[in-house]
Length: 78
Image 1 (cartoon, rainbow, N blue to C red):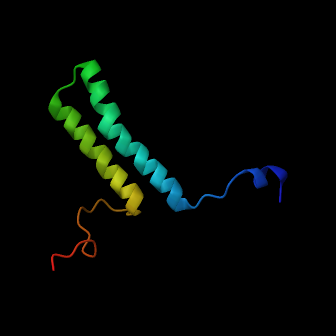
Image 2 (tube, one colour):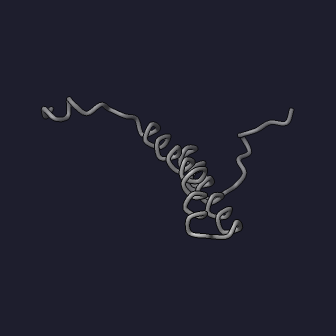
Image 3 (cartoon, one colour):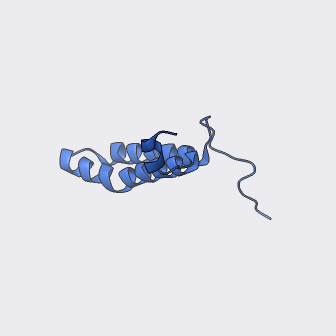
């Protein structure tokens, strides 16, 4: 084992996915509206970008590869 590998904490792939998902959610909630206001973008375009980032965040955290919106095992109404 190399000396520099002992200094790097081992992170699970799930932790990396959570970090990326959190960053995308933060960008969609805070950064996109701020930049849109600064650039004078319309509300519809801002909303579309926010929705796209939130969906990407959800896909990263859940680990889904496809673009499907529904997950049959996710929720139960009973």
